[in-house]
Image 1 (tube, rainbow, N blue to C red):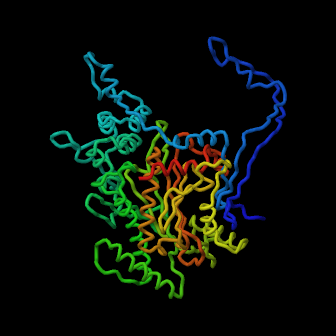
Image 2 (cartoon, rainbow, N blue to C red; image 1 turned 180 degrees about the horizontal axis):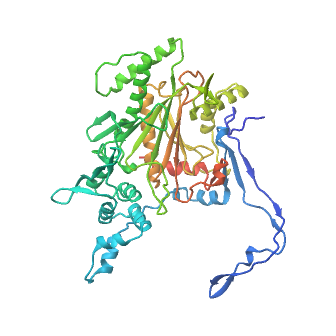
Image 3 (cartoon, helix red, strand yellow; image 1 turned 60 degrees about the vertical axis):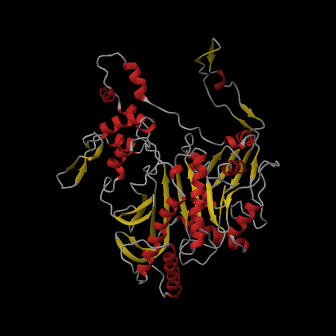
Length: 534
């Protein structure tokens, strides 16, 4: 069976076009004609929903199907009428800015002149769904302060400014926050318009969200990042979170500077190298302090030297890194992204293999631990077996030789940003309507293979990607890393995928089948992104 990918050794992407004509047999028994209302003063019936005979579809919309570079990611389908409309004005690819909302102003006007005009009592009477909607969407700090006071109990100073929360101890001796309404608490605490003293008391101050230890820190003037240990983690062997500190409030990507990104990523590199060094018996002097970039590089080189001469493979042999950006909470209490608004990134190390169990007993077998980069490795091996060539080298060739899907002479480049080390580009087959990918231009497959220049380029391009997407109006995204195993000698490259969440595209069965539906050509989205470069 041929490998299903859009990459070819000839430097041209593969894709196909569907232009169907077809007939549909009408098997309906009854005509249930009814009124839908009026149109132009006349009754409007649903007759078009009940055709009297079989249906013939002629010259249906042309649909482009693009196999993903990686077969396990399925294929992308672009509807040509949607994409053609966008191609006429690619810069229209953006979201409108949120409109100001002030429930307080509206209701204050309504209450004017009433003897019992009490804003607080009015909020107390609102249904929770309305409270949640206001907590998420209001841009008026006065609204949010009232909602915060409904959600939890504050300690305040003489001026009424919150200084902390009221806690209690449960029968098991555990400390509990005096939260009266958890969904409302979470929603209002994640609204960037809530005054900072309330944010500090509710979620930002270390310890406000629990007892996770801070085990690392990066500090440079106004750029401050904590590293939290998540010891009882859903990721085996624990994981870590590089979290913007409470004195560096960053709820919006527009406020995240390149220095902030450098700090977030520095803690990822540092924790990874330090854990590997400990496993290899490498002593690190200096006590409780962050390593400099030069010290990190020296440590990385020593780790690689030790691994090259080691007789046994390391216990940990792969990284895990991810970033959930943005927060939203529906009034129905559906949480729309797995994140708190204060910007943070998470990371861990993965073991090479885990002892297999059978019937509750340990066997002599070992199972490789799961890492999403392994799925890329499978593709790299399969492509090389078929073509005796590097998948990533040919992918870069395809990107550089790209031609527009619609065959026009318009803008054809997929590249958004590039330097000597990395490329930020729009994948030919996107798996999120606004997906971007970041790829190393050199044979670097993980951060252990990334020297100081490469790490700096990765940080810069990652910051650029998020600023570009933020400039287009993105408010939520998930970013993941596809990393190569430390012991893998293939040409697998380090790859990051930026996957924004759009308001009207939550995902449905098509996406669960890996059929990714688009309404624009990738070349036009690349143009829209380049227009937002900082």
